Amino acid sequence: MSKSALHSSRPVAVVVLALGGAAIGCDTGSVAPADGTGGDGGVGGSSGGMATAGTGAILVCDPRPPVIDPTAVIDDMEDRNGSLTYVSGRNGGWWTAGDETPGGSIEPFQPIPEAILGGRCGSEYAMRVTGQGFDDWGSVLGLSFAYSSSGTVAYDASFRQGIRFWARVGDTSTRTIQFNLGDFHSSPDGGYCAEEGEPSCFNYGVVLSQIDTSWKQYVVPFGALVHATDDNPNEPLDPSTLYTASFYFQPQSVFDLWVDDLEFY
Image 1 (cartoon, rainbow, N blue to C red):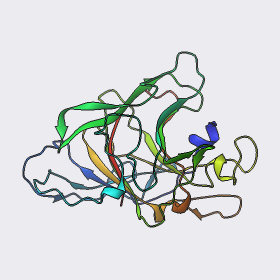
Image 2: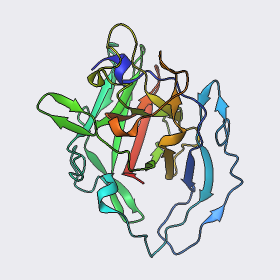
Image 3: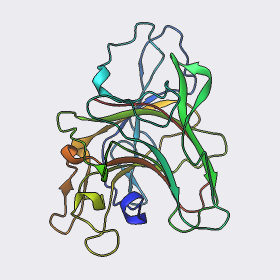
């Protein structure tokens, strides 16, 4: 897989709601509103030309969890393997990639869920990846939604509104982490862009600027993600042709990322 297909992006301002709090627990409680302005650019703002995710509310676990659509689950990690939940035609899996900097490391190279110390509101496992030493284009934790005998294929999520997930970082990790979605504009498999040549492949991305050591839920609506292509300066994401989702770490980053409960909504 090429650098351009997986890691490059032209992120734009997008409203992304983050739910969570520093003292996340599983006690009975209520949702308390925050100011909603976020930081490092706030909700829908930007920092250094990058899209940012704002903080929406503080969440305390409800002892009466909402009914979840089982067909919406991308991966809840509880099966403790590197495959997505096999439902609704999704048969893909997790992967990592990094540039060729000597000494660069990412662990585990083949991602598998790790136990959450103390759990998180009923969740016992999450995907975790750590690494450092990539000095060229950086590194990435990613997933492909569907495979066929010919390789990665498009997945139709056009009847969904977006993706949400929980995430946090370790104490020594970078807090500049970008979440990307790739459609046919972004993947060489889609036939629009080229690994080497023109037009080049760019993902739709948003920086999780509010990420820290506490668990938060991020909500990414498809309709808010746009980028520039040779055909359209404001090309919207095409959720009917999703190929990948990924978490991108910039060059020279030291990263320790936890991700849990990915699902469509």
